[in-house]
Length: 108
Length: 123
Image (cartoon, rainbow over all chains, first blue to last red; front, side, top):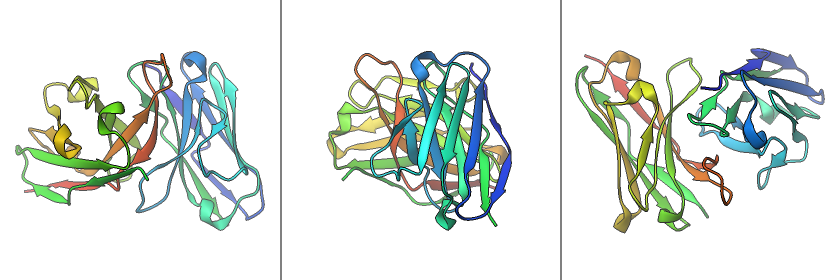
């Protein structure tokens, strides 16, 4: 199975700063079939990005995804207080689907 | 709008089974696979398995093979996940999620999630 490794484990930034989250795959993800989810405490996960770079419906444009092959990035261009959450990448290019272990974004 | 509503929290003893339901609305139930994902306390998201509501075909993560069963009742647009031989390690929030696949793709992303069902395994 494809193992996804996310870094850093925790990111602590101030509002307005740029957040860069990494997701590295143990083998190439076919067709950039990679998604990002935001998971806030007490809520269900929410889809942010699919196909590595396509924003889901209703997602603000401060969220962007990039990458291909084994290296993917989620960027939050200007952090807002409500972005406090754990962010997960997931690959759906090969069975079984797998998630990364998550990056926690803290707001200073 | 697409909505997934899950059954309420459960407390089970070790060795018991639990059945969690997920009722869909706002779309054609049989057109999208339902997946189940869990999150144990302090842990990340873990994929459990998938079900095609149209055909009933299922696929399970290897670690749950033999212990999980996914079924559906199409007339009431409801999917179920049953997990047996529970241990304390099965204590987790269980989410159902709708899978969106593009034409020709075998797998897809999860574009709608239920609110989660907390399953606690304790004696």
